[in-house]
Length: 635
Image (cartoon, rainbow, N blue to C red; front, side):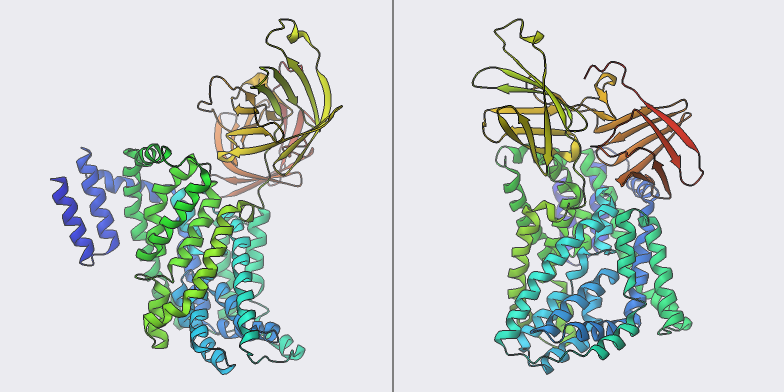
């Protein structure tokens, strides 16, 4: 019976049924096959919509993008970038890359960019003697470049579906996006030089005049990124702020859009929003079925036998996502594929934020690959050219994008540059597999450590006093300064801080793995020590706790993964936190509000020098004296 139903669903999909109908039908049949009521599907959809308040940012950002698309912003942007970069070899080509990326970041749809900008970018490129094939490929491929920049709609969708911090995703996409544009810009400059393309002379007056035209729009992306990165502007505030700013500039200051035109802009923008939300809603039910049946865990168990290397997994992931991009549009791919892949990627220690950037970098390329390459179809309609010609014109840009994809995939620091490494302070046992000796090592705050050797054949070795020394953390290297020189260890953080692995760079047989266990006696100076155990092997952890403080009525737990629980006189609140320059920024876990507290002593993971920390709520002025629990420590 299930085979017959599966065939019916397949036929419905092949004859062109809407994707939401196919996914919804699959969810209903799957839950029915698992002896669950069909009403479960509706319940899952409703509960997800209610529990994801960030969904409202999707229509707001889309609406802001369509306002920009309907104004004369695109012509002002092209004029300004051309005045600033047109004097360079390939200058107009670079202008095309930057303006398209900027425009797509706000509209969230590369098709809108090609339609809005292609009409005057392509003729401008041809008039300056760029080859037609190159020009077509440049405009077609540039349409999707902005998907890695905030406030890109696909970034928000990935964050909602995967449960990732969208603010972190916004910050993570900037450097990979700039990197991809720079590499493509070098290719454009090369074509400009070899093709002897005409350039314009630099004219400061034109640059100034064009800047005055766009001076109100240029600050928007800067304000958004700076506000989100510094924690002063949460995503819940960024969406309405963007709409208000764009309306102020385009309707009141520039007067490009009349009030009577607004209903039509709302209608056009909400069509794409409705389609996205409809697909997302039915996908929530499908996702819960996947979780209920433990499908990712079963896939991982099967894959683990053949793929033991994280780098091999990432290579296969890229191939898989490139294929997905060939047959699905980016929004469908995100809501359908992410729930299946993320749990597997987690087991291979792929950071969820980095995973999001890998997804988007792959699916950007999917816009240019048949049979569903959306940019190819839109460019074909816009420029009256065959899809085959446009695909051939885009091949060089696809190959360059594949090279940048490898760098983005295998250099996670490009995406995670803004993350602070968690402290590696703790208590360790180093087992030397050759001699059987064990080194007990305790790393303390302030760069000091205690150490002593334990010989299993010497029953009195436990009484040996500790020796002292200093340690330095530099990137992923731990350096222990001893009388005999410097010992270096590489450490890798697993699953955003749940456990760590230390490996001696000079002696591969000396290793230590950590297991995080929260116990009161292991807390010291605001951090939890890593209790290293080689035997038994790593088991389940109890969290990523950095600190645990308690006052008269207030208990605070801070975790490595950016979460904080705040129990004030029995009332529990959950927050996301970030630490910058002595200030902990708290954001309500429901993403509906903000709160900030200032710290008298710097509350950074590496520099906590007091067990008595006074927290002052910046909104209310209330203070709390938090006393660190440290009942036993002789360290």
